[in-house]
Length: 508
Ligand code: MSP
Image 1 (cartoon, helix red, strand yellow):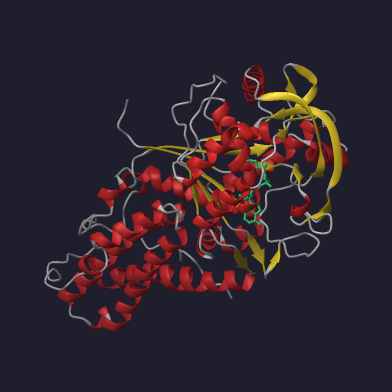
Image 2: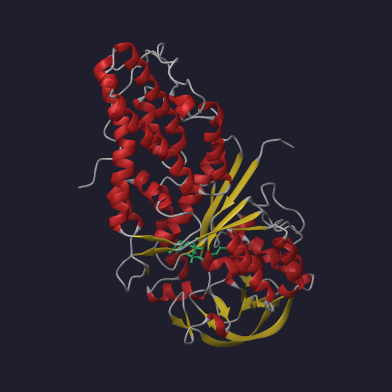
């Protein structure tokens, strides 16, 4: 076995009843940032995302559009894939629940659960929300409506197959409490422990009236409950073929990302299925918050929807990725508005980062004929390396990444950018004598190179542009390992820099 550390990260697979929206983009970018960071560390990374394509809701939507379900989902899936391409999402696999291999494996896995008696014939009666594709209890509803979907829950009663969730609850709860199966942030863990205190009923695992689903192998009249089908993507996406007790090499996941809307199902049904299949539980769920626009839930009716395309059009891909990650602490709900996004763009990207790179490159062009100067006379000065790029600084960043505090990583990077800009303002290198100025500018360039490495997981294209401006070949530069690359001294005096277009033109 190799000693290389592994990192398996997943997003939820998204419903394809509609186009990708900002919430989907948020989770997907966050996972991409983490996957890119762990790749930089030299770990074996697998990043899985995809689409959840079965169920009543999608069947209905296809009908509304006058299309066969498969035709309908193919169209929407193409939109998700092209959005992820646009946003530079570097996943290792995009899983679709309509993939033939996924379907066969789900059937095999469910057959196993049935054979061992964890799935049994029963009857389920309750209030069902189509939006959530879940049964609800009275207390989940407000005036009979699901608060997440603002739609009446319908009374449903049907013969179906049930899954023995109750059999596994005590074991799961124990693992959650001991953090063997971590749920973060801790408030979310407490919430889950709360669910477990309620009497967790067995769940309906099949549907008679939903045709758009995976037929149960032992009773083709029924289709698999869409969540049972969907959860298994986390294994089929790794190529698992349904052997109980045999996990694929990348399983368990180091991190499974999701928002709080789907925590409850994830923290109950999914681990119970894993235990029933004789497989280990994921190491960690990280639950982030919800995006609100001007304090209100984004909705078409309210007309406050911000789409991924609009973000891209206004700010460009890297800035959009940055803004999503920077605008709110990861884990909390976030309120966004065009005003706040514009402000942040201008302050942090145009003024801080863009301006730093631009002014330093311009000075080197003006004073050093576009060649990286030597810093011979600067070593006696307590240079930027010792002030900013200390061991503690980098371990702080690593620590934030480990705890998924992505907004905190950004703040730490940008505090140095701000200080460097301030330093240039205070020390006015254009007034220094040549020797001192050469040292100062060379240190600025080296700092910018390190900053490009630090922002790389968030803004990969910008990092490349900065490397090029510094006269480096981005591909060659990126062949270095992160922990080596961030060491001071990667630039060679005499190298020609290349002034480029402004990285982040100011918005008017
Ligand atoms: N198909 C299920 C998940 C199955 S996973 C085995 C589903 N799909 S969904 O399309 O509704 O996606 C829900 C997820 O999208 C959330 O958990 C979150 O990751 C992301 N978001 C959707 N809207 C969001 C916001 N407004 N804010 C933040 N993230 C949100 O549930």
